[in-house]
Length: 363
View (cartoon, rainbow, N blue to C red):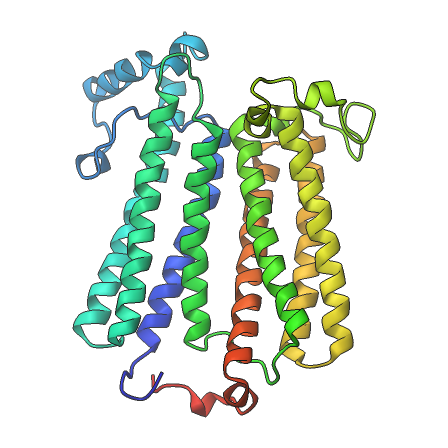
């Protein structure tokens, strides 16, 4: 980055706004899932769908469409119009937030390009991020469509996890770009190759653990085995329970016992890794910023583990479920920033060592 492309403050404000909206979207998506609202709107109308039902006739039409769905016939038969409106508004709000994110990102990108606030390379990177966002929306409809198939009362767990995964990748790309802009500062010294590998491993582990959580949400595995640290009286259920579904590989996405066990094991490994990483970075004494982030990551993961245990023991009440999901966003966000700054410091150690606010591009 050089002075050739000034006025970077707009970029930071735009990207931060998108980060906040996407973070809210992940939480609202979790609420949509926990309230069973995701299949209440049975059509995908990207433009006209922004207008909600107005008047009794419009509501009756929407309710009639829902009554034709397998979820209504198999799970919610006899639902009142008032109950339908409750789940409809959750899903409508979820989709509206998605539309808002798309408009904010596309609008900001257009302004940035037309006013030459980004270089050509940066513009291509941001355009690629926009494609990622669009793909996430498309996967969202594919996910909903899977739940409207005959015999289905919920969306397919794998497709729900893919939908979540694309959202997290887009969120991560926003934070990486903000790190590139210098909005999180710079480390004074580069980490050793081993510690950088640890930062990257924590990022990969955080993402993998959230995706395992997506499978838990998709299969509703959190509503069973509501004890801790045991599962059904032992560390894990017997093998014949864990692999009761045929073919065997479907157990990893459809068997609530194995899905929940994998999420638990992932949490144990990730938490242990965060503690070891924090100890190693502290002993290295290379960068105060890196040390602070390592400690914050460890603290966040401890809090997230506590929220997960509480949500499990209480059979996932809405408030704890959403807090646990938001905690996951915070953990991933910090892991992305930590890994990004470690990578930047290793790539440009001299500039990182001499970093000062004055070295940043003009606002």
